[in-house]
Image 1 (cartoon, rainbow, N blue to C red):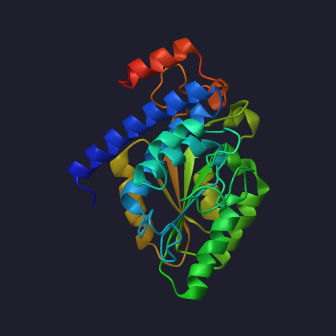
Image 2 (image 1 turned 90 degrees about the vertical axis):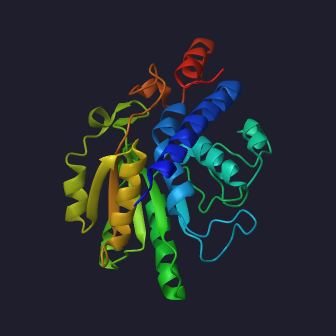
Length: 276
């Protein structure tokens, strides 16, 4: 069980990461603020609490846990966490999306230390994760695969093909986390493509389902522990989040999926996040 002292440290990191990501996205006038902010606690708790054998000095450690950001447009928040761990300098964040930068608009495993799978086209991350999890089993390794999905991404048919495969092969060394912010590129998920009861869908596909507040560090960490204790079936955590979390004018707004941050919004964001 996670201790209060560690919870506080993780919450402080989340606040700092939100400020830094907004700062970079404002500077570059590009990127995806809404989804980066909604996934902050999920990525932070995984990288700084849950995952094992992460080592910037040996980024390809064969027994490391794997993190696949299937919703690859949230790359800025992933990069900020990897920089904090020491995979590359924090200052390199200011090269985001520059020509020749290692920090591309979507994660690339060939260029960026700490990135375990290239992502961007939605729907591919879960299938890749299942392949990695099966490879762990075949190689006799104990690594666990954590896959972060977007709820809009659940519209993709490949997600459900992968879900069937994970249940068939009883892949219990994989945990999927859905960043369930209920907003996608052009509107709400219910307006674009209603998914009905997502929990019941995953259960029908043979998955163990957990739900939590995706902005509560303790809730997330408790769910990770519960997922590891489940054997014989894959687990999905439905993390209830808010798109644009932390910046009032962005929260719940599809317009901030990929909108450049103007001066007024930046000033408000810094005020609300305790920045300059």
